[in-house]
Length: 341
Ligand code: AOF
Ligand code: ZN
Figure 1 (cartoon, rainbow, N blue to C red):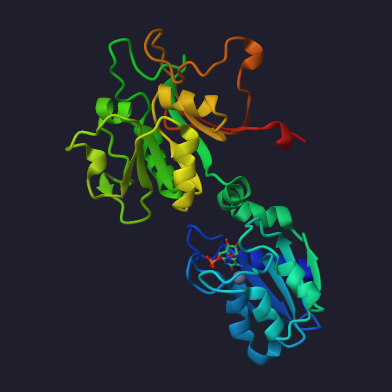
Figure 2: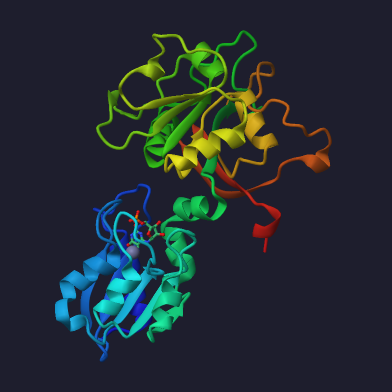
């Protein structure tokens, strides 16, 4: 016997099964309960193009699904995309009640709750909705805002310098911090730098583990700017796909990327590119490594972003602080007016 809340907790756990990849689709779980509260079946989604969680659970339940309650972490879809629509499949299986957590923010897929209600199914939404959204934070952000979530990563000295006066910048932070950045890259969908960074530093931007190119997830490498890239640039090798966007407009960059299913961007560019994103209001979070070192002169992490008086400072909320090797890691969020409550 499981309560609907217990079943939803279980749906959230199975949604995050190890075989549910980070990718363009949300991670979704489903538990089917018999009228007496017995668990009939569980199911989860395993990535774009595979059956949705509801279909997976229905396949396991077979005819026992008749009269059941479906507990799903996302509102059942109403569209025929790569698969679906799940609302129709639940009806066809004879499910009588549907409890979902997060309403589907995807305009293409939304409307399943209304379809089910219109067909006489009892539908309840919102149970553990925040937990469900937290399972797919960047998917939720990207489909709600129509653009990827942007995390700006920077590494500086205590006095905010990213290079010395003579331009030397290798290595400000310790190996432990640099290893973490590779793990962060493998968790995002795209890494973005400017042409200036490619021309000056010739970064590789691929995910490496212990010096070797990782065989796991590699983000799309994106270079932004009008200048041509040198033919031998390391970013052009075949370790990961690379895209050169000949624009300086962060909005345009994100518009192209969201169409390519990029939901989380890691901005690793220099001070000019960072300033363009800050100026456009398109930095959502900051991952900062502070090395306990002082330079006193040299480039600062952020170029002029259009603020000239203290009241205009971009204020962040720190979400986490940790020591990484010899350095301090700070994670912070940019809270927009409507998010502050
Ligand atoms: C999933 N898994 O279990 C559910 C989803 O590309 P498609 O056709 O598979 O559709 C993806 C959309 O379907 C997704 O963005 C979400 O709005 C909805 N529900 N998606 O990937 C699932 N239930
Ligand atoms: Zn579906």
